[in-house]
Amino acid sequence: MTAHLPQHDPSNPVETAVIRGLVRSWPRRATVRRREPELDAPTMNELYDEGLTDFPEAMLPFAGHPLWERLDDERRTRVRAWAWIAYNKNVIDIEQDVVTPAFGLLFRDAFGTGLSDADREAVVQSMVDEEYYTLMHLNASTLTRRRRGWELPDATLPKSLTARRHREALARAASPRSAALTSLAYATVAETSIADYLTLVAEDPTIQPVHRATIALHRRDERAHASVSAEMIVLVYDRLDSRDREILVHALRDAVEAFTATDTAVWSAILAAERIPDGESMLREAAEGAGRRRLLQDCSAIDRLLARLGVADDT
Image (cartoon, rainbow, N blue to C red; front, side):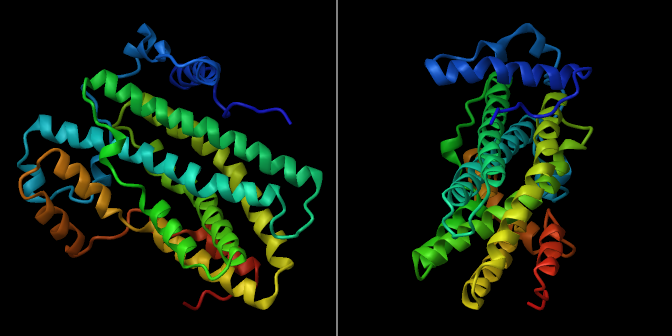
């Protein structure tokens, strides 16, 4: 099995710069602790324009709220930079805490499915890819901190909602078997739906080109991962008894709820860190406001998967 870098367009200078930075930083991280000078390279000056925003205005849950509109430009810029840091952290939390452990279960054949060598190779390749994605999003946050000159530490933010809900679901599991099925379900939802989540940023022309490129690179490979995840869960489902199938389907639906919900805890932490006046009231009113919808409207890939499994979506 040969690890491959995320697919990219060599003619696109922004995507190429992201990939080159990834190539340079990977061996350095693996062999010695040091700063990543590629993020400070002169070429990055051409890719990061401090006059552009770090995060789409439309994705802020309180966009358009009078309290938000009255804030000065610097505070709004800082909140949007925080939002980008939180976005990257959310992706990293999902990859590290939800997806990779489930792939490990599949590789070890924890469900007794008797995976072929080709199946296990696909699983391991996906695990390697997840580490590249983690590094890309880590680099993206580091670049933003350096270019803005702001600390914006990840430690200020809680674990992502999906990771928190995943941890809570595992704690409720009645047995190790149930916990393993729950882990598989959450990872499947993440892998089959994250491309749509990434699209929300990748296609927004108002944000930093280097941000869009990072997301676009990740999104391309996730299309393939979605297929791998779907095939793996079908193989597992076919060999489960009725009780285990019930656990798995319930966990899939619970994971969809976690993945599509607005993470108010993260937004609350950002507003508190920036001491936004009446920030909690703004967030609460935005959440309760008429017409407010989930950022990610659905996980249609899971609907299709449930239909493939012959399970009616009647919840």
